[in-house]
Length: 270
Figure 1 (cartoon, helix red, strand yellow):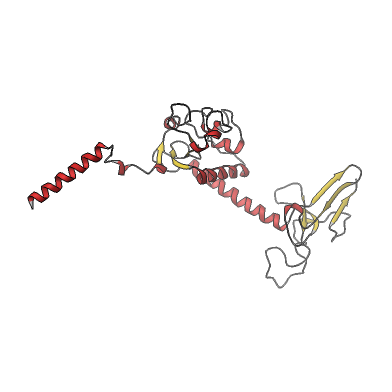
Figure 2 (spheres, rainbow, N blue to C red):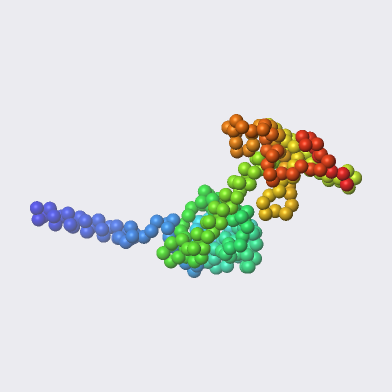
């Protein structure tokens, strides 16, 4: 038994020596997977795609992606080299530029505070694009992740702003389905004309509707929208107690002066 144990121990040592000779790192299992790698600004600065550098990385909202396969776009001379290539300030996350299109040194920054909902959606769209098309390699230690890879308050605020923007977008799409925009035209000779069709506002539907002014809470002006004139009010498809007037009785609507209540077209003379 002792001889067998000694032989097994020798075999294990020989195997370990072979692995070490091939470059095996016995501590490798302790290292985080590539997608959880933490990079400092100095490390990120080494991946700008220049000659002699190890690769081409890009950071958005603190997440780092390998964009080598998109070198013609992000590498030296590419249209988006300001986001990853030599034009980008060393080791910097240029998230704000994804929303604003400002590729000057003042715009290539990671501060996304104060951006409009549509701009936050642009950032979210780009982040989804890189997640779907490029390999994640880690996180950038800085504004959005701390030295332990934990999300910072800045990241939580950015994600909350994106969620709010997504909610706003969904509500806007719903309002557009309920109140599609009118067709409109104006001339100095004839004045303004508003009319509704089954495709007006880019919303295909089985009704045309009639023009009305829509006043949105918090807005000073009004928009011309097409309003359904039959059936139950929006959001009450199963209601049996309704006046069969569609959304005509919505309190945020106002009829155009001088136009027939059920006319699909309204002309306002000069």
